[in-house]
Length: 178
Image: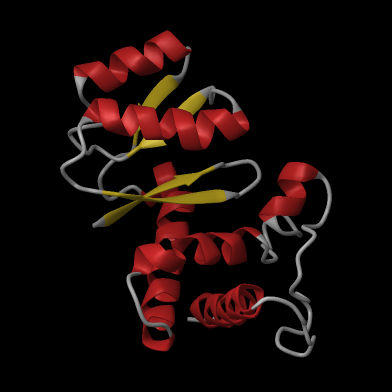
């Protein structure tokens, strides 16, 4: 019923993790290990809001065991965690726009929104987060420069996925121009 947004400050890559508000801190730690550490290793530092679960003794102890410095953002001080704030605003705009286009629950297509976000050009790094992270452009069936102009033949799932990614990419452009 909510989304945990994890942003890498260097590459601007983001993970949008569907979670429930009632997840325990140990469940969140498990998700973090499976979805973030598995792909990127243990972070040297984490900037977090002051959510009670991230300020808990368990979470602080876990960060200490991982060797991660835990920093908390300051209320009314966007410079502390401005990157996450911008990413969250873009995500909200994209989800609102995509929800009008697609049927079903947002968690059914959050992975496509994440894919679109991480494969779109970011002015601050002058490339897409995927390219910054991996040193190459993402190989994808969708033509990123001319969305919708490339005809893709294949299973229906690929066609539906590509259509949704095209919509997500267009909604990302719209969200960034606001």
